[in-house]
Amino acid sequence: MQQETIKWLIKVFLKTKFENKDKIFEEIEEVLTNYRHLIPTFDNQKKSLGLTGLIPVDFENVTYKIPIEIWIKYDYPTSPPVCFVVPASNMKIVQGNYISSDGRFSHPYLKFYSSNPESSLAELISVLRETFSIEIPLVEKSH
Image (tube, rainbow, N blue to C red):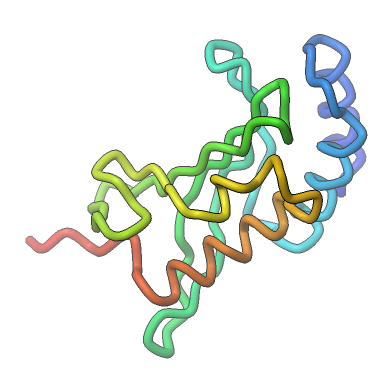
């Protein structure tokens, strides 16, 4: 993780009431090391730390970069992250077993997140990638 990102995260943690700062820091560091197209962000209105950007998904032998947002609340991991797919202007959401019309990702993994000590942001991204490789969440709009 880059020095600027580390400094930024420390500033966010100093100004906020996140309960498990060490765990969050370690998990974000792992995610950013493995997924260079994700960036951390903070939303004051949501009072949430976010990871936004692209994750690679292999669907029908083609690798797509799926735009996502993952939001972490102050009481993380007691409450699971909130995940969305975020379509670009030329894309539309495909509702499915785990994606709602607003792009929110709902999956059994999230229901048991807080009770499973193995749960992590990196594992969540693996679940997203695996799920999207079976059921793609976005398609290009037809003209």
